[in-house]
Length: 89
Image (cartoon, rainbow, N blue to C red; front, side):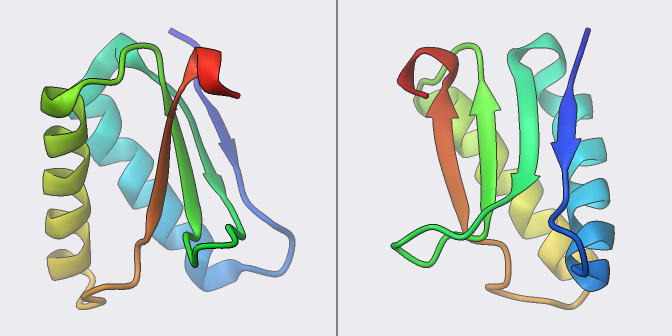
């Protein structure tokens, strides 16, 4: 399993969040997870998550992990994901 985690330079707070998020996503998605990276989307998204297979079950699992991380770190609403399938890049 190969996963890429990319963090924009100077984003120390986001780095901790991304690492916790990546850990949670690895546990839930396993080999389906490819990329977790900081992101500056035009829609306000701040994290890009790339998966091999994107379906409703995968999206629900991702949002469940996000909710858990936001609760654990006391940062409700801070993780705004852009979720893409590998072929959508």
